[in-house]
Image (cartoon, rainbow, N blue to C red; front, side, top):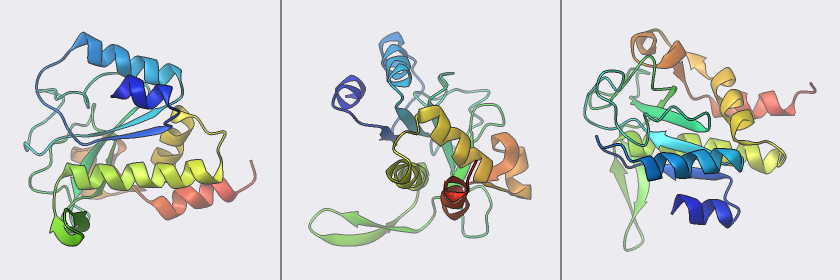
Length: 176
């Protein structure tokens, strides 16, 4: 799926899946997507685990285009279910009681790092739509630079950052 999406011109991949097993073929596909400038947004997982100690894949591969996302709650704290990692999880994003579409033309509230990952991938898509020349690493850097540093996330997420899409979009509208 990663190879297909990359070959069809996808620029951002939202990956809200994973598990404990590592696979060389998967890592190679993500590395090839990196070579093609594709941002790979990955869910940290909902196992309340430290991914630094118990890696989950694909989120824990050390590939430059991966942006691993933990879930935060409405009080800007790490969600009770979210996995984390000061070395392996890059950013937090809202992931508790998020209104989303569900089958049969309905809406429902859901929680999980999958919901948080969609926020980050969506913001990356907005950035890309405004500056099409941006590559995966550019998008990743902008999202991290513009993110808010939050005290509770300092112990859980690299740099203690939570997505701030508004600031990321403003950062791209400023002249260099």
